[in-house]
Image 1 (cartoon, rainbow, N blue to C red):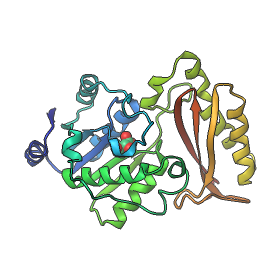
Image 2: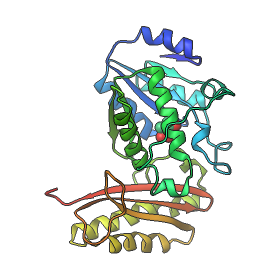
Image 3: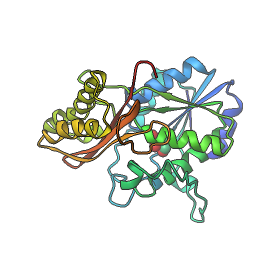
Length: 281
Ligand code: PAF
């Protein structure tokens, strides 16, 4: 496994990689969710490139950029273990030089849900992913369903800007007790770690109700909110029952939806989601 930092070293290393080429963009502090993306990329592609870059432009002032967990040596060990061919670790200065002034703004699907509470977050995500795509020029790129809205934004950008890249969205990887894997789980103390189970519990309770015939969007949102609000350490920021592709909030009877939420557990903000589908849709 080769590790490069500069753009020129990346270009040189790319010349030696066999195609098809898979790209797994990450912000580091890797967990089994990231590794599942690399494993999937290994199945599909002859070579796999992983980028590690905690992208400052997708963090708002006051968010956790400074404290975002980092452990490059551990990340490199994990990536080697799953057969990564090349790791690119660019510097902030190289990605955003002082005169940087071009942004990618995916207008519609960036606005609801996370976009309402994390201003400019998806502008930062779309811009860095576009830069990663342009730099690596992969055949396929892999993202997790955990960041469901991010997946929709990137798919839209990929279509709108005619990237010849196949976007592959991989399932959420959960701890055995249901907590969706996230680098931010490392912020949780023991009590908070236990409290954080209210997210998956809320989603599972709503899924069970949906499967038993509850189809009303308001009611589904309410079921999740009730489960989360029962947990003392949890503060629900939003729960959404939205169209899985347009992300428009749904009202009345639904056939399918992206059920998603953001919850503060103490000072840690966690997100989780599930897609509800009627068996014949
Ligand atoms: O999902 C992430 O880790 C990041 O948002 C991404 C896609 C690597 C862009 O910085």
